[in-house]
Length: 197
Image 1: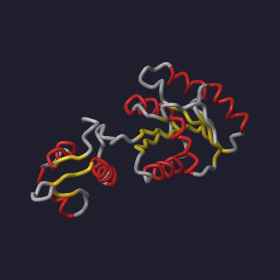
Image 2 (image 1 turned 60 degrees about the horizontal axis):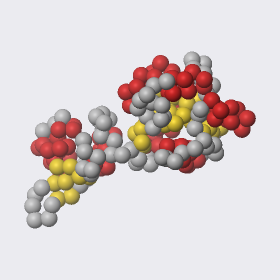
Image 3 (image 1 turned 120 degrees about the vertical axis):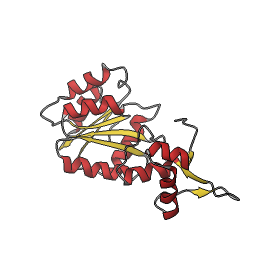
Image 4 (image 1 turned 180 degrees about the vertical axis):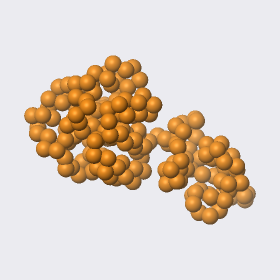
Protein backbone atom coordinates (compact mmCIF):
# COMPACT_ATOMS: atom_id res chain seq x y z
CA UNK A 1 0.00 0.00 0.00
CA UNK A 2 1.17 3.52 -0.74
CA UNK A 3 2.76 4.96 2.42
CA UNK A 4 1.22 8.33 1.59
CA UNK A 5 -2.32 6.95 1.75
CA UNK A 6 -3.42 7.60 5.32
CA UNK A 7 -7.19 7.50 4.71
CA UNK A 8 -9.07 4.60 3.13
CA UNK A 9 -12.41 4.08 1.41
CA UNK A 10 -14.79 1.27 2.42
CA UNK A 11 -13.64 -0.53 -0.74
CA UNK A 12 -10.00 -0.27 0.34
CA UNK A 13 -10.88 -1.62 3.79
CA UNK A 14 -12.96 -4.44 2.28
CA UNK A 15 -9.99 -5.57 0.15
CA UNK A 16 -7.57 -5.41 3.10
CA UNK A 17 -9.94 -7.38 5.37
CA UNK A 18 -11.19 -9.77 2.66
CA UNK A 19 -14.84 -8.89 3.28
CA UNK A 20 -17.66 -7.27 1.29
CA UNK A 21 -17.86 -3.46 1.28
CA UNK A 22 -21.33 -3.83 2.86
CA UNK A 23 -19.67 -5.49 5.88
CA UNK A 24 -17.28 -2.56 6.26
CA UNK A 25 -20.23 -0.16 6.15
CA UNK A 26 -21.89 -2.11 8.98
CA UNK A 27 -18.69 -1.92 11.07
CA UNK A 28 -18.56 1.82 10.41
CA UNK A 29 -22.26 2.49 11.12
CA UNK A 30 -22.17 0.49 14.37
CA UNK A 31 -19.18 2.52 15.60
CA UNK A 32 -16.85 -0.51 15.74
CA UNK A 33 -14.68 0.99 13.01
CA UNK A 34 -14.13 4.70 13.42
CA UNK A 35 -13.94 7.19 10.61
CA UNK A 36 -15.90 10.06 9.09
CA UNK A 37 -18.24 10.86 6.21
CA UNK A 38 -17.32 13.19 3.36
CA UNK A 39 -19.41 16.37 3.87
CA UNK A 40 -22.37 16.47 1.48
CA UNK A 41 -22.10 12.78 0.60
CA UNK A 42 -22.61 9.34 2.11
CA UNK A 43 -19.03 8.30 1.36
CA UNK A 44 -17.18 6.98 4.38
CA UNK A 45 -13.46 7.43 5.02
CA UNK A 46 -11.41 5.41 7.51
CA UNK A 47 -8.00 6.59 8.76
CA UNK A 48 -5.37 3.83 8.48
CA UNK A 49 -4.57 4.10 12.22
CA UNK A 50 -8.23 3.39 13.08
CA UNK A 51 -8.29 0.37 10.75
CA UNK A 52 -5.10 -1.00 12.34
CA UNK A 53 -6.64 -0.63 15.84
CA UNK A 54 -9.84 -2.35 14.66
CA UNK A 55 -7.93 -5.23 13.03
CA UNK A 56 -5.76 -5.76 16.12
CA UNK A 57 -8.80 -5.67 18.44
CA UNK A 58 -10.46 -8.36 16.34
CA UNK A 59 -7.38 -10.55 15.89
CA UNK A 60 -7.20 -9.92 12.14
CA UNK A 61 -3.84 -10.21 10.33
CA UNK A 62 -2.47 -6.80 9.39
CA UNK A 63 -1.21 -8.07 6.02
CA UNK A 64 1.68 -5.62 6.02
CA UNK A 65 -0.57 -2.72 6.97
CA UNK A 66 1.43 -1.24 9.80
CA UNK A 67 0.57 2.46 9.37
CA UNK A 68 4.20 3.34 10.01
CA UNK A 69 4.17 1.36 13.24
CA UNK A 70 7.40 -0.15 14.46
CA UNK A 71 7.57 -3.94 14.39
CA UNK A 72 8.87 -5.32 17.67
CA UNK A 73 9.73 -8.95 18.38
CA UNK A 74 9.76 -10.12 22.00
CA UNK A 75 11.72 -13.33 22.68
CA UNK A 76 11.25 -14.59 26.22
CA UNK A 77 10.70 -18.12 27.58
CA UNK A 78 8.17 -16.67 30.04
CA UNK A 79 5.12 -16.35 27.76
CA UNK A 80 3.06 -14.55 30.43
CA UNK A 81 5.73 -11.87 30.80
CA UNK A 82 6.16 -11.58 27.02
CA UNK A 83 2.42 -11.17 26.50
CA UNK A 84 2.19 -8.52 29.25
CA UNK A 85 4.98 -6.65 27.49
CA UNK A 86 3.18 -7.08 24.17
CA UNK A 87 -0.08 -5.67 25.59
CA UNK A 88 1.72 -2.68 27.13
CA UNK A 89 3.52 -1.83 23.88
CA UNK A 90 0.45 -2.34 21.67
CA UNK A 91 -1.51 -0.03 23.99
CA UNK A 92 0.88 2.75 22.94
CA UNK A 93 -0.76 2.56 19.51
CA UNK A 94 2.44 2.66 17.47
CA UNK A 95 3.95 -0.78 17.82
CA UNK A 96 3.13 -4.05 16.08
CA UNK A 97 4.42 -6.67 18.53
CA UNK A 98 5.18 -10.36 17.96
CA UNK A 99 5.86 -12.79 20.81
CA UNK A 100 8.11 -15.88 20.65
CA UNK A 101 9.29 -18.24 23.40
CA UNK A 102 12.06 -20.08 21.54
CA UNK A 103 14.96 -19.03 19.33
CA UNK A 104 13.61 -21.21 16.50
CA UNK A 105 10.24 -19.41 16.59
CA UNK A 106 12.00 -16.05 16.75
CA UNK A 107 14.18 -16.79 13.73
CA UNK A 108 11.15 -17.61 11.60
CA UNK A 109 9.15 -14.64 12.92
CA UNK A 110 12.06 -12.26 12.32
CA UNK A 111 12.49 -13.46 8.74
CA UNK A 112 8.80 -12.88 8.08
CA UNK A 113 8.17 -9.65 10.00
CA UNK A 114 11.58 -7.95 9.62
CA UNK A 115 11.33 -6.25 13.04
CA UNK A 116 12.79 -2.85 13.81
CA UNK A 117 13.82 -4.13 17.25
CA UNK A 118 14.08 -7.46 19.07
CA UNK A 119 13.74 -7.57 22.85
CA UNK A 120 15.44 -10.78 23.96
CA UNK A 121 15.91 -12.37 27.37
CA UNK A 122 19.60 -13.20 27.28
CA UNK A 123 19.20 -15.94 29.90
CA UNK A 124 17.40 -18.21 27.40
CA UNK A 125 18.91 -21.68 27.27
CA UNK A 126 18.47 -22.22 23.51
CA UNK A 127 20.32 -19.14 22.29
CA UNK A 128 23.36 -17.09 23.26
CA UNK A 129 23.80 -13.33 22.82
CA UNK A 130 26.67 -14.12 20.41
CA UNK A 131 24.50 -16.32 18.20
CA UNK A 132 21.73 -13.70 18.24
CA UNK A 133 24.00 -10.97 16.95
CA UNK A 134 25.54 -13.33 14.40
CA UNK A 135 22.11 -14.33 13.08
CA UNK A 136 20.90 -10.76 12.65
CA UNK A 137 24.15 -9.25 11.34
CA UNK A 138 24.62 -12.01 8.75
CA UNK A 139 21.18 -11.46 7.22
CA UNK A 140 20.91 -8.50 4.82
CA UNK A 141 17.20 -8.04 5.59
CA UNK A 142 17.77 -8.00 9.35
CA UNK A 143 21.16 -6.36 9.87
CA UNK A 144 19.57 -3.01 10.80
CA UNK A 145 17.41 -4.63 13.51
CA UNK A 146 18.21 -3.24 16.97
CA UNK A 147 18.78 -5.91 19.63
CA UNK A 148 17.78 -5.09 23.21
CA UNK A 149 18.96 -7.52 25.89
CA UNK A 150 16.89 -8.03 29.02
CA UNK A 151 17.36 -10.33 32.00
CA UNK A 152 16.63 -10.51 35.72
CA UNK A 153 19.44 -8.87 37.67
CA UNK A 154 21.36 -7.82 34.54
CA UNK A 155 24.35 -5.82 35.75
CA UNK A 156 25.91 -2.77 34.10
CA UNK A 157 29.01 -4.87 33.34
CA UNK A 158 26.93 -7.59 31.68
CA UNK A 159 24.97 -4.94 29.81
CA UNK A 160 28.10 -3.29 28.47
CA UNK A 161 29.36 -6.71 27.36
CA UNK A 162 26.16 -6.99 25.28
CA UNK A 163 26.87 -3.60 23.70
CA UNK A 164 30.36 -4.85 22.80
CA UNK A 165 28.73 -7.82 21.04
CA UNK A 166 26.55 -5.52 18.94
CA UNK A 167 23.39 -5.15 21.02
CA UNK A 168 21.85 -1.68 20.82
CA UNK A 169 20.74 -1.51 24.45
CA UNK A 170 19.87 -3.43 27.60
CA UNK A 171 17.56 -3.35 30.62
CA UNK A 172 17.49 -5.32 33.86
CA UNK A 173 14.20 -6.98 34.82
CA UNK A 174 11.99 -5.82 36.34
CA UNK A 175 11.82 -2.57 34.40
CA UNK A 176 9.36 0.21 33.75
CA UNK A 177 7.62 -0.08 30.36
CA UNK A 178 8.18 3.64 29.87
CA UNK A 179 11.94 3.06 30.12
CA UNK A 180 11.67 0.31 27.50
CA UNK A 181 9.68 2.55 25.15
CA UNK A 182 12.26 5.32 25.50
CA UNK A 183 15.01 2.81 24.77
CA UNK A 184 13.20 1.39 21.73
CA UNK A 185 12.68 4.90 20.36
CA UNK A 186 16.32 5.76 20.91
CA UNK A 187 17.84 2.66 19.35
CA UNK A 188 15.51 2.60 16.34
CA UNK A 189 15.89 6.28 15.46
CA UNK A 190 17.89 7.00 12.28
CA UNK A 191 20.69 8.52 14.35
CA UNK A 192 20.74 5.69 16.90
CA UNK A 193 23.86 4.89 18.81
CA UNK A 194 24.47 2.31 21.54
CA UNK A 195 22.14 2.96 24.43
CA UNK A 196 21.29 1.65 27.86
CA UNK A 197 18.91 2.79 30.56
